[in-house]
Image (cartoon, rainbow, N blue to C red):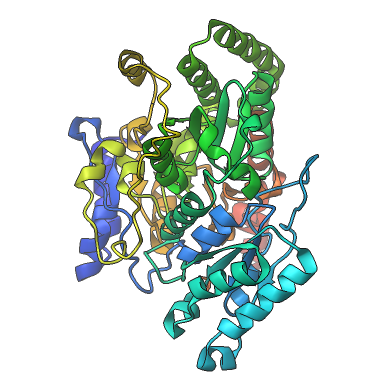
Length: 539
Ligand code: SF4
């Protein structure tokens, strides 16, 4: 790890290249971890500087692409020109399959109103109605989610009125999301809008109490990338948990309707679902626990925390036995790959959660994280939820509706006594998240909303052996002669979650680091001096 003072001076040199306001802005978004200075404050969830080559996406991507899109039994209808729907069509690997009893899996389709110039001039509501008519006629869905794109808000299409019309005309539940791309500053606003829509219209509308069994849980913020959710399900099912809903990987609206019946919510991605975790707690009394199924150690910790929450000695013993057996199966495999990865370093820049999750996975194969950052996380994801009361609203997030939950007196129930709650609070992140900075080592760097210039600069200073990020950065890094792994799409591999996923992850990293291509980056004629005789001849 780097010396704190040295790293601070390197960061200062990188930031000094900015002029005036840009310098003032960016200096708040970069810090060197220094436990002596704790608590360290970072600026996040602020407007991106125009022209800086950010890695961020938009509000529509956060709503339709991340939260609503993975629900397999609803039609996510993009209202806008074709680009938004087309570029988000099957590019996020939120896998889904039709299980026994499932009626639909609409995920392979791309539904868009394909707005044209005339729709922008005369309004797109007519076309949206026509699209709904066709969708109902052809696919006969139980629900439709209308997702707005940039022009929709600008031309004033009333998607709420169209949704009402759709329900009245066809009897199909239709939910409208005003998730125009320019809202907020990143994907994050879209997560919030999607959470609100699901909370107001779906969760709690289930009418089948028979789905509730012992140890009923929901998994919030798990999107089944590369099958992660299925590995998590395998583990939790083996331990006897009853998973009511997954929000929203391989998820369905019909299952989400009963999410209010859960005894506990497991929150994997804090950024995208903390809204509903809190709303469900206030409305129904359901506690949530922060889990992390990416990494063997964190998977074990999460399983122990959940078992401890229920407090059943049988469940706790079963959990330990299960962990023992799983470890026995995977440890020799991981050790094999660890030999290759040991001592190497990694830089991570991913969305709003994974730069945190993956640090444990890398550590388990002997790799140290020297830089980590998020595209669109908020200060609480970096510093912990205790800073939430100090976060100031700004012009960009003020217009995103923040719901206040009303207690559902009939269905509200509390599982833990005050005494038990206080005892568990000390042992786990119960209704709490401590943030990423606390798990990072002194001298490592945290960067919020990194840009192209900063990626290049930090690559030169930190020289990591691996850069874990997304598709936009991948080939820039490869052209610099360094391995890049996609932490969003898993380079079309996975799952990486749970016990089995950790082995696939270790194998993929070891394979990447040992690929012969890295020894061929420098052409031989550059690496080896020309023969002396030849040089003399030329002279
Ligand atoms: S920014 Fe606007 S146009 Fe671009 S993808 Fe998002 S919604 Fe579509």
